[in-house]
Image (cartoon, rainbow, N blue to C red; front, side):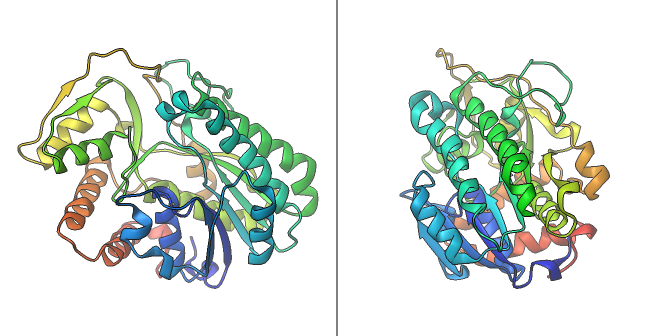
Length: 357
């Protein structure tokens, strides 16, 4: 990744008020990009957007729903973006059981609206559409999923993201490629990092339990997931966006950005590590019947390694350490904008492919 590439690039980023989008917006601002965000208002209570003072780093921040085509189209046209990165979504599996219509309309029609708006903006050259590792039809096998494997899903969230992939592929082939707008779909694992307060996510739930002096209840201790620090896939998205912008259709299509095979760990392993990092904490099994969730899930990132020279840099223990350090600093009322910048610099220093700021 060339830091010079991003200086003064105009980036339109949906979902910038969320956890993952917030980290990317922060990183892009450090690189000198002009970031225009479009998202729902940040959730009440602590959130990454507010705690890191992210508003002050952006060229623009539009609060809106991606299902509002007119407002979204106006925002993209006004930004005169070079690159569009689409992260806005309903991102939670269990919430999709509670709100299937909202999940599907946001994730599918939101993607339709984004791409419909993009194809009318002459300045856009590259689009990175973020989906999920859960877009694959999960066969509960031990092998890692490759980009060529079948899409599908059991729950409304997974299905909505598989549909969003198909929508993006159709728009690329039918409209975008002919207009010299190059699009890639990207799939990452279970991202972790400081500043995530979402409900029904393992590490935020664990840290919340510690803050409230409670014992965390775990519903699926044997589930295996591809855990990775949030900066890992974000680095891949940025490297891919560069190539889409410079090289075009050769880098379009689907890409996985997952952790090392050995960092696909069980929920039990994760919470045991977190208990070690937080002496006095503990967890217990929640025996109540739960909605269906996949048990085994791993990603094959061979394509990104071979074609982008991308590879994960922080192992899982490091990722957990960085996450806990960020949360403890927040509890101690430290400067979270400064600490976030510092962790990004630490990640860059550990990765020779990412250049320097």
